[in-house]
Length: 236
Image 1 (spheres, rainbow, N blue to C red):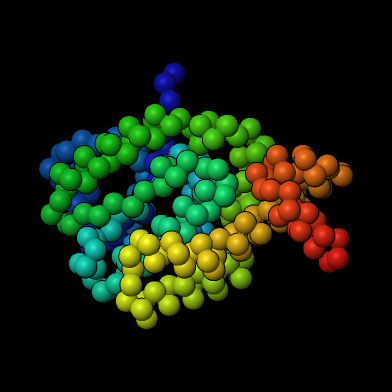
Image 2 (image 1 turned 120 degrees about the horizontal axis):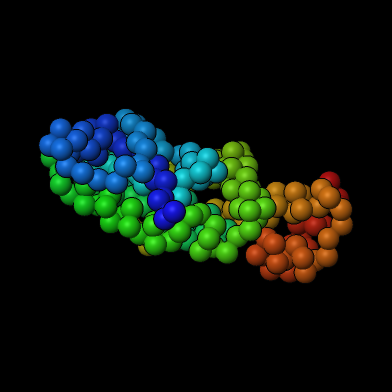
């Protein structure tokens, strides 16, 4: 039996959801392996929801919002861009294919565009295979990494720093890709690595002592980072 990917989409009520509704009324076909959650704005999608979606069995997650500059809530979709970069930063640390997460923009009148975007995304995810296949994860590693991502995105230090970055970018009025990535790399990526590795190490040590080499291999971190976390755990 051929693989049919499971796609989860979060769609803005005012644009992409309306476009999908219009496409349905017009009897335009798009892949059936696609579940939609209607939201009031793309900015309401939290990194926690994305990784809970992957953990629930999604092979790909798409966020659909209004074109930049056309958000009903002024700058909501610009904040969604920040969210997207944060999600991809986490995916990079996990060695997870970033193509499994995507943001698309469409107006309520662009049902045709949305359908074509969905078809292309479906084909892309189908080519990647089930979540974990291209990543070369075992079943146990997949469970470990996704649970670690959920624990990270629930962490108050992560959430406070993420919120402060959004506030800072909004105050600056600069949502350029370069500035967003610079702020995330500077202020959030160290926290992402630290919290992910810490959770993973705690889980790996539950069934007994492990060598440094084993922990480095499983977490994908470097020796210095892993030793630093182990020293912290010993002292705590």
